[in-house]
Image (cartoon, rainbow, N blue to C red; front, side):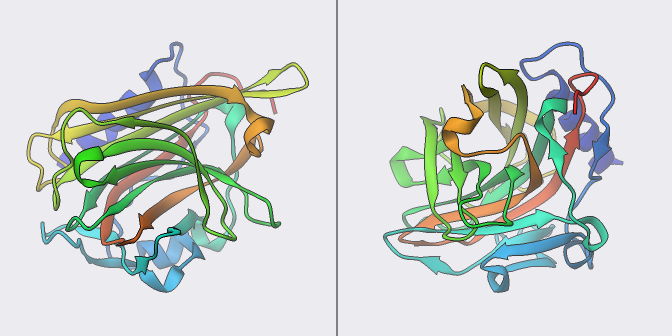
Length: 265
């Protein structure tokens, strides 16, 4: 019951974060705590799949099942990436309907820049395709929330906006990360509006506990084509490390499409 209450709260926040006139979601992924075969049934590895594993306990030893990212990256950095494919089938979300993604994220021991995050508008059929990610980074005295594009073929992360969080990220503690985006028609293309929030929890050892306070927030607007994204794409989960070991866990992952009212295809 606690998990369902938490999911309902996250969905409510996704549907009201900076926008009005919320409507019922046209697509709802359901709740994933990555127990049993949830991951193998409904997700497909995109990059560094051998180091992405579900069904086991989280890396912070808080006794919760999670999707775990392991392995290291050198000074150039790298990305771990997976996408939601229910029953093995691709699922594209239309940004013009509004897309929301949320999850609880835990980062294990500190060693240089590392983190995990949410993915939307992901396309990975052809070289040059990209996705959009919101990443929570643990980086010593410069912990941050970052909006970036990711290249599923090379693992390259291109930051779009990075802001410090107002309280240090604690290792082996759960944080809720929310991302909401809309894509609108604009002159000679589309405009993208993204908002993202990081929330601490009253019990940092329990990803299903009540929210404590926001510790990070960013807002970003840009012509969509300027950053190489498409108006529709897949949703998923990712991790990032630069000269570090990934060692991050994700649970209570959900995504929605269609909270901004009627959708023009």
